[in-house]
Length: 118
Length: 108
Image 1 (tube, rainbow over the protein chains, first blue to last red):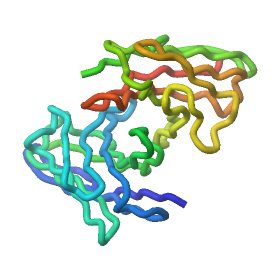
Image 2 (image 1 turned 90 degrees about the horizontal axis):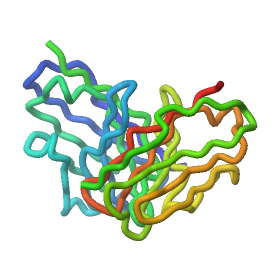
Image 3 (image 1 turned 90 degrees about the vertical axis):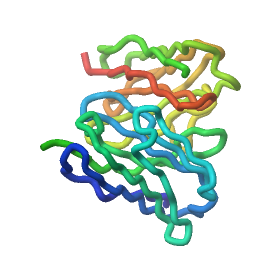
């Protein structure tokens, strides 16, 4: 069974940093591109970042470019999102998602809540 | 950036009724790279439809997708109690990936 489990969320002050992780199991992690998507509670889904299966290619939403870094450790079946210079508007539930086929997100984690507040 | 606009914002229907959700793109979605997701409160989104019209694994036949170019539709033929949720469309033809703002299907 495919499982994605996020961790690392919490309360952080504006300007601070946080590192999210997504532990993958039940599939060959190194064979799949992965994404991060966020959602302000009660609001819609917003794409954040994407990484290729080998980690060589990454892209970011304009809102996080230069502040967030997506990475992966295929040996440990783990996806990361290093977030720095955090702002109140980064407050959201962060989901990791697996890409299948042409690009649809066929598996999602349960999400981890990041709250940026003083 | 491809902007996706979903309508209506809220759909109030009774179990057994047919639901028709619309997703309109600001430019043509190449190869019908459009997906639909269902999200229930406190849960992660779940893939329903990909490639505009293909049901994902385990998705009941009452869910169907159609459309091409800039206009796409998700139809739920007969609403079951578990279908009341928020539905999002998403395009994966271009970068950045974008989602519609969602349609809430609520019990009338």
